Image 1 (cartoon, rainbow, N blue to C red):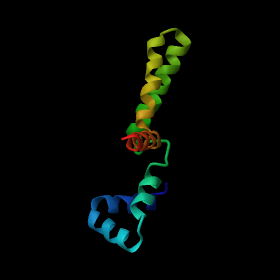
Image 2 (cartoon, helix red, strand yellow):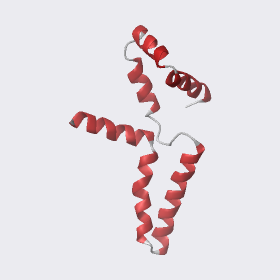
Image 3 (cartoon, one colour):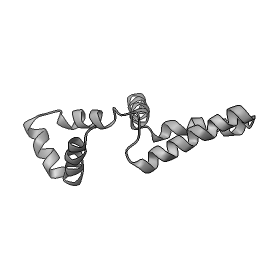
Image 4 (cartoon, helix red, strand yellow):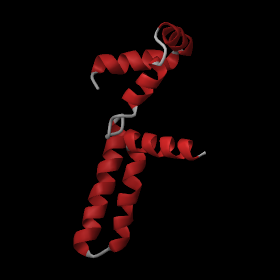
Length: 96
């Protein structure tokens, strides 16, 4: 997602009235925007990407040096992905 799209989505997130007005003009716009936001695999922000990379490296360390407890860090990595979180939320929403 480019910088212009980020600015646009930031504006919409800070102004729900504008989003509601746009949704009246173009029904289904909220669903399209949420799908667009949740389509990325990598998280937003440098800090979250660094945490994700650190967990990946911690798991690789555990794989090569025999500390299998560090491999659990790979189970935490998907929590930082907007796409995976969105898919899980959609799945549980359909179940309930």
